[in-house]
Length: 114
Image (cartoon, rainbow, N blue to C red):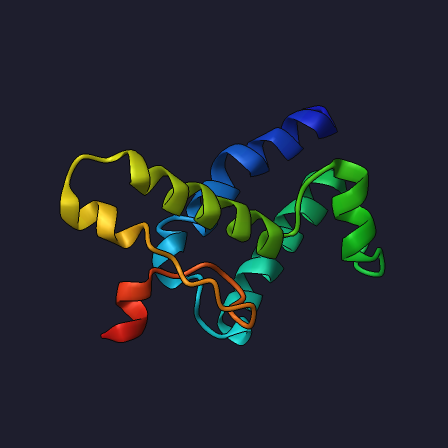
């Protein structure tokens, strides 16, 4: 199987599995997300045949794949921006996200006040 097809398989199967329900759990501590980044790195190394001493930043850059942290941030922003378009008032209330610059990921204000 060509390398490009293997990388596409990683993007089609592994990454959606890793990021499932990410708006719920992505505000957790970075050490809980590290195993997920490691899993993605291992899958990309297997798909490309890259050796273990190849830097992960180089691997991601060469393949044009975002690091998991950046990908999660984009998913969360997209999710919370899409809540404004819903008609249910309870779901619309979730769209009020925190503007705290110290938050790694946008989180709903209602989750912060619970």
